[in-house]
Image (cartoon, rainbow, N blue to C red; front, side, top):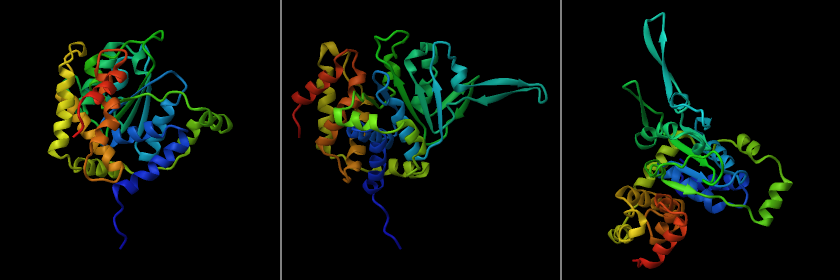
Length: 305
């Protein structure tokens, strides 16, 4: 009988396959996988054309998840995402027709081009894995993941995401432009999104659920939890940080650090895991333009146990 494969060994092929799709972005790919393992939702923010949608396609392919894509526009309505109840003349009753949110991985493309009303329709789904329409609760498939892309706020036709919605995303990642060697490989190769569509599944939904359970079993020593609390406490002392980070942010930091440790083949968290995920987990929760720089500064001032 074959020995059971370790979580790290199961994750290595996912990273390798994604690096062939999105050239030269090993760190964002690893963090995106950590977000999936931690059971969170992912926000990709960058200028158009750097691979945000390609990364989403690649994650869907390697994880083997059911997938739907919604292009968010200014005229998109909440019912276009959640679904709508339509009167059935034969049964003389209303029948709920499910919207595209009823999937395992929803790509909310250019989410900040939709109005705040439509953006807010996602809040319940992001927080609780369910939607309520006409007073009836509908449970979403499991695992359920939202990957949202958004363009920089200075671009025309965007509506900033409210802080309450940003807080529901476990991580925010930026991809940035590739280096010269990676860009040359992109220019010399074929369509990266087509490559993602042809990628075979390397995991199943049940496999992802099992890896999430393994992530939850990764140990956090009391000293490690002290370190997370020290980071939270230091942020709350900053008058210009809007009150600092909430307990929800602390839970997100802990869960992402557990996932990072699992990817490294460990069943315990080190401070290095916390520091590796901190910017992606915390920066979008600060109401300031240079939030990533501020979080890096926080990591430099709080002593490491």
